[in-house]
Image 1 (cartoon, rainbow, N blue to C red):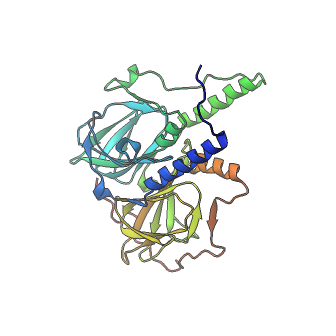
Image 2 (cartoon, rainbow, N blue to C red):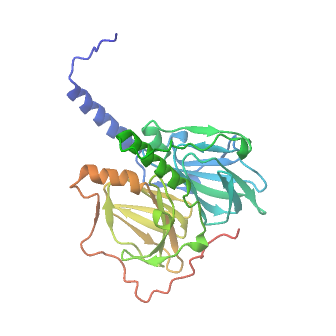
Image 3 (cartoon, rainbow, N blue to C red):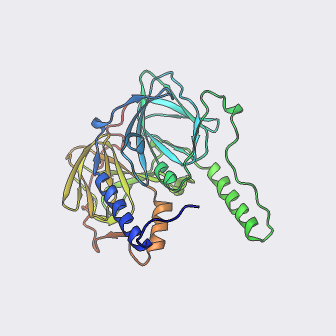
Length: 346
């Protein structure tokens, strides 16, 4: 039997531990990850991978990660599955992704959702290499001790173990049966989630905060996720979004154009392929630096799980705040350029 040797109470121990923990993450805090700084390396999956944010390259996060990928035309990756959900945004080229045996072909600016537990692999098509950037909640799954990754090499889908499922529950009225039934129903719904969101199907709407936006990953368009949501914001030439702040974490991935973000008193410039990280309780606002072209940015966060849980636990604290009168630009009379502006040819 081990014996506690410390001469201080749990109160002192926990205060020191919390202080060290917060200091550790404060040192790791960053506002921008530039595409030009990402190093692409070969991997056993027959694809190149470049880490933007991930503990896999000593750039850890507590909630989300972001990784750039490249696959050559005619190449097929290995098949694997993991216990966290993710999505991939196609940046160039064309190819396909197979999810649980069903193939989805994609081209630039399409979005593919990868449900947790689904077997998936990718293939390159066309005349050039294809690239995409993936975002996932792997860090959160690892933090909770729920991160599992299973690689099956080139095993045909028909020979792979079935997808993880919950045992069906019967309507017996007891707490255990209720749990079985509830989890089985949720897993069944997630198995029917929308996978492909073609960019051509995104419906943009002008918002009160400035700019126009359209969902790429969200329950309103048929995605059943573990909390991931993503929306494309487009800022009109010379325009901006209104200021706001929130708890939790939000990432902004620049698809096309150039601009800057004001976080409190810090100005962060960005261009295509860069990732802006806003995960402090700071007022922030995004601006399009061009007077002739659209700036398109994808907002990614784990809103429907982590944020909702935080909001409920910290009530009555308000985890989202904007000005009583929005300082959004007047978009009356704005002639929006073609939403495909800057989109690469497949």
